[in-house]
Image 1 (cartoon, rainbow, N blue to C red):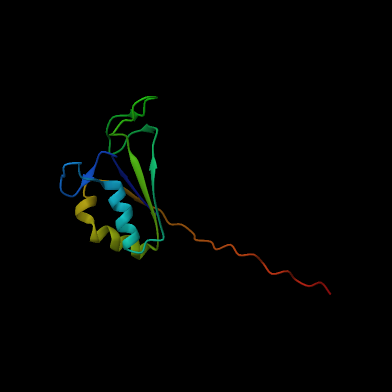
Image 2 (cartoon, rainbow, N blue to C red):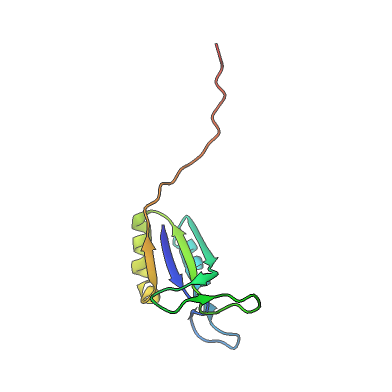
Amino acid sequence: MLRIYLKPSDKVGPRRFWGAKPFYRELIRTAKADGIINAVAQNMHYGFSNRGPIRENGSEIADPHLTICVELVGERDQLNIFCRRHGDLLGNKVIVYKQLEHWTITRETERTRA
């Protein structure tokens, strides 16, 4: 599993009349295109990243600088290739790798009792 911490205000691509694409959404689209098994973005409520100030979402207004975590699940080699391929976009982001086990749960067939 790879966790990439970034700001929801981070953008990628050319600025258009309606604005550039949110970086976290582009990361997820790219992960899908690269065959990553799972990719999600998680909003944070309170915290800090990259030694920045503590931030929080208010009850009425969301903080555009409070961290979002994009979590990618895949094989280690696949995640490594993803980071190398898109290193120019991931330059100053906090990225954490964690080894996971992938379980597949199936329904056992009923055993006949003799």
